[in-house]
Image (cartoon, rainbow, N blue to C red; front, side, top):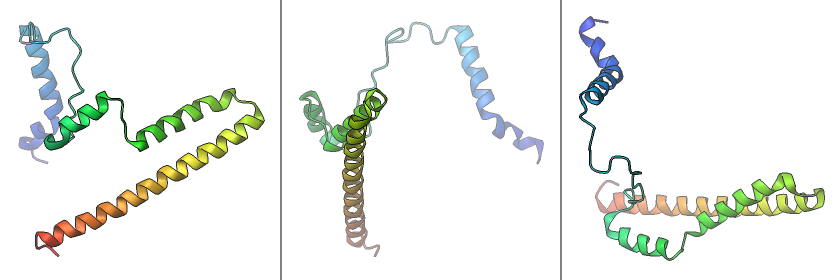
Length: 127
């Protein structure tokens, strides 16, 4: 390869060097929010038109059933090593049931998504 393309492959090193230079110059000193944790609870991946509704439900302690099931699965998995053999068998059965239900919900929602995806494509004249 030609040496004129070499800088393109070293973008990370250039970026890191510039960040270090800015730190040495003090460019990052006294920024708003410095020393405080980042607020990462903004639900940026949730569409703006439903963000407020999701926030209200979240603050009220309402979570989707899938989240509740995943939490229960995690608690069961964590408790397995502490259980007696008879209790462990029962817990493993329950764990399998929860995983099966969760898988069934996923496959059902995936098929619905494909259906709606096809309808949208048809509506937009693509199929």
